[in-house]
Amino acid sequence: MPAIVITGTGLFTPPYSISNAELVASLTSATERWNADHASEIEHGTTAARSAPDEEFILKASGIQSRYVMEKAGILDPDRLRPRLARRGEDELGIQAEMSMPAIRQALAQAGRAGDEVDAIIVGCSNLQRAYPAVSIEIQHELGATGWAYDMNVACSSATFAIQAASDALQSGSARCVLVVNPEITSGHNNFALRDFHFIFGDACTAIVLERADDAVAAGQWQLLGTKLATQFSNNIRNDAGFLNPSEDGERDPDELVFRQRGQQVFREVCPMVSTHIKDHLRALELDPSIIRRFWLHQANLKMNQLIAKGVLGRIPDDAEAPVILDHYANTSSAGSIIAFHLHRSDLNDDDLGVICSFGAGYSVGSVVVRRVSDSTALS
Image (cartoon, rainbow, N blue to C red):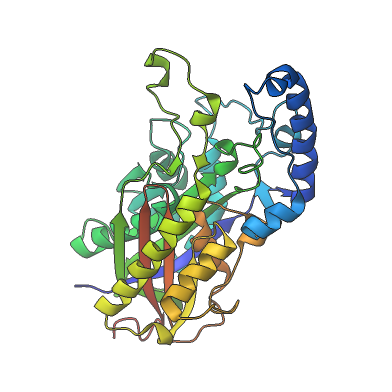
């Protein structure tokens, strides 16, 4: 089988940042107003009062200090608590395609490739702005790429699942240069009105170029030693927004149409699942966890990452072994582990090993084991 390598990555960071303090101030105002409007129901016990947010809770619960977003004013407006995104006409580039292009061009520059050399594009993200035409095909058109393109969704694991799909396409010969793109506007599905959820998500876009090693021209490459995917059904992370909603009889609770989760159950169930997944993957490749230089884990929750890494290594990793970007980016769904890989790999040497791992709704888990190689050793 031909060796497959990552030859470039790119990152688009949105223009606005929201601190925990700003979020808390906004939700405090909205919560006080909501409790006042529902004072009678609260007094009679038919409705529970909403809890006020606080910065200490956010940092302790998640490790998040701030997040980047595509639009800030609407999120912080106590009367709105969601982004205010302008509607675009059919002749305008869509917002997810637009935020993808800077990340794509950065990734292609690293790979030493032009847009017309790309012959496959996979857009993987937790939410797509429309059913069709595919965002990936819009990107293909904007980029001047050839071949084929499609969208996919495995929530927070969309990037790692797309990497395996790209690897499969390269190995089968159905593509020569595959672009994986993860445009995450997770602020659009976040519930900024509830204390337990309002701080979790941020926006970003990542891009990855994958090629066969014998075609690659980039100076710095990362060979895929193996990919491993797993899914297991759970309702503990859920979002019921979909095209069938208007056809349903009765009214839904609006909170069902945005992100929601049973956080403690997710923590208890997902952490051991992911640790076992990584250990099994490394064992199948006959690799001992102790020789892995870096773990680029899904950036959802600091405690989860520490517990997962401890389950693999037998100890809490240091910052160099499992770098954290969620403190400033928050949870960017599928983009999180790729942001960590993009920002924290330049110090590794040839033959150093690392694991890119995602986990989230589904449940879904994806791991990609990589080896740092130079252009002269990629075929070995």
